[in-house]
Amino acid sequence: MSTQNYISSVFSGLEGKNPSELFSNLPTPCYIIDEKQIKRNCEILASVMHDTGCKILLAQKAFSNYDFYPMISEYLTGTEASGLYESRLGAEKMPGKEVHVFCAAYRDDEFDEILLYADHIIFNSPNQLRKYGEKAKLSGKSIGMRINPECSTQEGHEIYDPCAPGSRLGVTRDIWNKEMTDELIDLLDGLHFHTLCEQNSDDLEKTLKAVEMKFGDVLPRMKWLNMGGGHHITKNNYNIELLKKIILYAKEKWKTEIYLEPGEAVALNAGYLASHVLDIVSNGETKTAVLDASAACHMPDVIEMPYTPPVYQACAVTDGNSSAEKCRYRLAGPTCLSGDVIGDYIFNRELRENDFILFGDMAIYTTCKNNTFNGMSLPNIWKYGIDGSLSRLTNFGYEDFKSRLGK
Image (cartoon, rainbow, N blue to C red):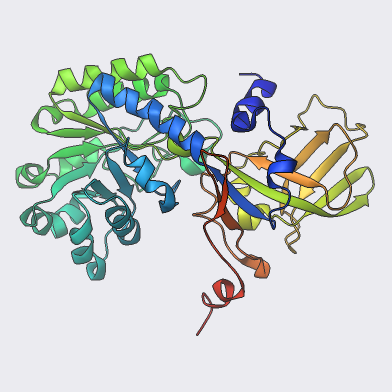
């Protein structure tokens, strides 16, 4: 996909509308979540479920904005959680839907409460299965084990590669052979693998071949197979037909129920981060627009991933862009962190103080990962309704900053 087509897809929900007229009067920084785009994404996911009989869960680690759960629950099977709080949130805000939980290691003082909320409990090691498996089974839960097929398909995102050498996530076949007794295997209802990050179905196909090679003898004993998340199913160039073939192949091969648990695919291109320019500063040939939004605080994946987020009516600078462009600006946050830089962009006009800046694809890994470093305020969250209305969902302020640090 070309850069221009990518940017167009990110802001497709605003087609024919002027974001400045829609959002510039909102107090910034703020997140805006597009209900219509979430609905569109869920319809695509629901079509995959319909055509294959698989079940799809919302991975809450990417998107936990529960005001949208009632609509999402009309399409998806339930939620996936990473621990106690997400398990509880899924159970409370999607009542009657499935709640699956995976944690690299469960805590003694939380496990009994997790059993109150989760239907499926997935373990990360034989030791954790030995410790908690029988208790979970006696509580009527479906029990799974996360496996590591040792098949890396990612490039440039090592921080998100569960199959990297020495990874703590999932049981390799070597450890399985050494530690998984028949008694432990008898506790299991399913296997779980999660190896992808923003990837297409061809990478899932490679991964499933590795799973079949390493654990194909175990799968016939299982009731379900969870293929994890990282599937960019709602992205424009995603090969959905291949995904369907993969799912149907696994269902037929091992007579198992198939689960997917994407997070990004549910809220892809469904959110914006609105900001304003506070100042323009110069150092040599670099002109920096200091914003009221921070990469470090409000979009931490920009630094962790790292990546350069799309900006409405701007083009991110690449090696092929001229450094002499008159309207080239570095967008950065107001914190004291020198690396609080969002990226370099070329605009079609010169920027000035108070100009409105809109970042795209900001519904995922933002509201659930942001922070108050430097005393930065948490951006409020607004709902951009299907009917075009704007409604504020939060009211963050000083107390939200203070309450994390003492009483």
